[in-house]
Image 1 (cartoon, rainbow, N blue to C red):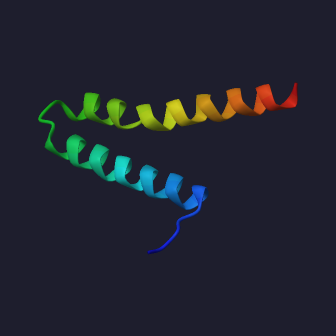
Image 2: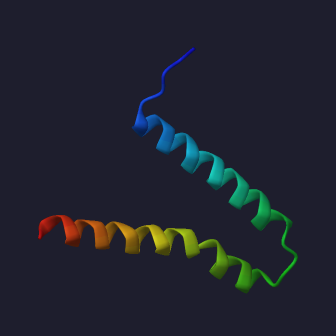
Length: 59
């Protein structure tokens, strides 16, 4: 059995979440404007998390 490192596990989890999110967004039947705004929510959350972790690690 393969032993996956923590970094690979995190990447695999992100890939699965991304595929699920893409599938859910593809099936939404809403106006294109709202769909494009909703599509960027994970990018914004990731950017906020990155900025917060880098700020906290400096202190």
